[in-house]
Image (cartoon, helix red, strand yellow):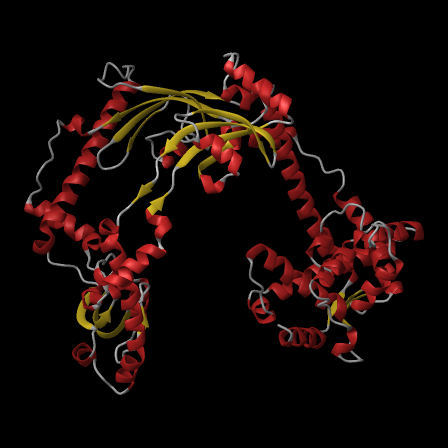
Length: 623
């Protein structure tokens, strides 16, 4: 079976769960007859056979498991490439060896236990949830297995479970083992640190000599290298490029304004909240309390276990409300309380927080906006209608230069390299095509995200090259200054650390320190590099560290205290329990794997590669 069968199991048969999974996946199991009448097993371990059915189902189950994890279903060919088919076979051999060893030792369960496992499995439950005899038989027939063989598999698996439990049961964990791990995980530090900035250098950067600059460029020239560049010639057209050529009549603009009337005209509205009551008496009592000043609306909402978000109905117009509610709310001359009013949910009090006057944006203010939108739509349609004629020109051998002469497309060139931007380079479709094109390829028409079209030609590929120092002198000199400042800051930090180690305080060396207590190993200290936090846990108590930060900072840190986890803390107890469980699980897994391998070697096994190949070929055909 599949990998679940190698784990320690609770009561219940995983073979049945595998069957349920296969049934859910459109009964995708293979019957023995599909592989030929003489082909029944793919391997044997002692007297235990691994049937073609077992192997096919295990392969399918592994495909399903991987699909759940990755969202992608691997084909049989892909499983072979990754060696997953071999892993499935290894698991089946290990399980078969365990079952065979249990049989030889006489470990088994009675008929009552087998029956209980079948009856209690929800895979065979009917509508009422009780065991369904017909459903049980149908499920087995659907995957080509009879009841006798299935029940034999349950009994064999149960025996293997008993043996497995005996092998991995009672694994202990030494206190020193778990405590060492917990001490490492939960140890905390108290740290005092200070930051040194460029002020420690009197704010002055040195200027490099010619020799220093040349040596720096020789060592760091890769940082200034011009990456591979693709010289591209292209022709393109976008809606924005032909907007001025599109004529939009005034009556069309006015018509569109009317069509979008709700965007430019807003009726009178109110910002309101609604609090529903169980009956009219409760609503009137609440209103009376409000009018007497005994409470306020917010408190009424809170007393009901609600929040203001729960009662907010937003900005609403008359048309959004029942007529009676609208009449009451819009009758208010200023924000306030209205109600109780009957609603479809019951009597309610309304609080109006703002009254918004009706608004209308005149056509003159939005004319250009509407015209631009209409022109863009028209330009996109015009470009789309020109697609076929442009394609025909390219198919007839027209160059990009000729396209620019005979169509609305414009000609351009670009040096495409990492970091390039602007113009056509900002379109993902163009970048992808430009990176894929090879010298000698004929231009093809491509689509841009805004409805535009383009075609391109690769002129040349220029390999990465290092420019002459004179061409990048300013950048190299600035990089040298930054590096030199960072180096001198680190030296200044080392000098401060030496004085701290000699007994001086942070204040005595002119720094304003900050102390942080109980820093955890996975903690984050704002302003400090993450790697520096990790270094704190490699140093001993009392150690002083001097470290570079970025090019403008350095840090000096002192480990003031190292604290082991408190054994009385409930969180420590939880961590110890989790660590011990992890250790037991790992040891059990390793122990079981070793035992299964030893049993298999002792019993002996054979694998029929011809049968395995036949099953895999069938699965290849089925995807």
